[in-house]
Length: 423
Image (cartoon, rainbow, N blue to C red; front, side, top):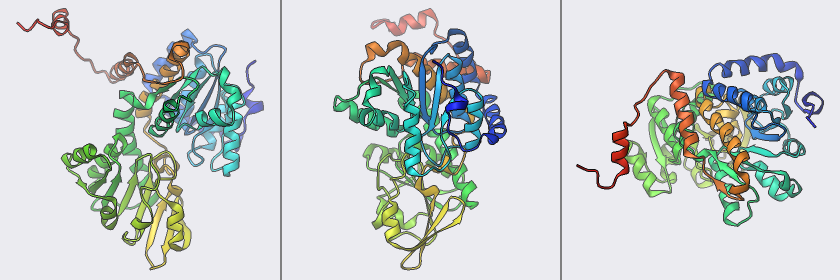
């Protein structure tokens, strides 16, 4: 039985729907790859009769992904994957478009969890997860729903880390496709998307110049590479901190200063954490930071900047501007934390550009179709996105840009396929 979105949904204010429709219409006009996939889904109906539950940062681009999955025949339910990234007008618009929504901007922690549980109460066949929250709930509190679940797709580095830990223990009960590890995800979304959107969020929130400042990038994975690249482009002096020797050498070769966090803490003006780990900025670092240092996080959870230790060192905490909290330390210094230490690009901005998420969400849609077709053979494991799907997205992107590329001749292919065709 189909779910009645208007009767079931929980959103902040349905009167906000008109503004939400405008946002969704804008991004959909700039997502040509996903539009092509929507056309195919409308024709093939790969999810006909199935229920799909999605947990992602609930803004316009995510909303359009939900509409594309719905166009493929699914009964779609969506909830937020972060309390500060949900946009209430987009939620209302999605309800009018027939998607069941359980999400509000900045709910209390208990309500946030309750809304996520509501989204799972629909008994999904397939899921799209961001950070591993749905999978974690299913494997702990709602194991009764697991027999119905065919599998799903995971969006983020943090989520993949959690999934692989489950898989290593032999506890993962259904297949999850590691969309984050696909080429068209980490090469473009993690690098160019995170790089731009982090500074969109920082600049919008602080209204301060980046040029001439020292930006400390904590972690030099694909997201860190993008943040460092954009900081350099804005005129910053860039320092990278790392625990991985190979990535540290790479950062050095890319032209950035590399040093331990305790040294970087002394010189940084703006800090961006992108590690997926906890406490990468903590008490010992606050002790030596400059007056006026700005802290931000672009990792999935708000644990990278240790807030309890910062508060313990402070005599007063106050909001000095939207999404900026000033921590006044006992020695008189001020340290500023953006967006409560949550993802600065989404909690204090609109997230990645539409053209970037076009490729990522195209991968999500195709990965969901793949796991629906192959779940019986995949079993309880973390599966890679098949290369042909990665390549399909890239080719659709090139077509949308009017760019052509070469193809191998038969002779060239034969040469590459032969072990002795060197003459």
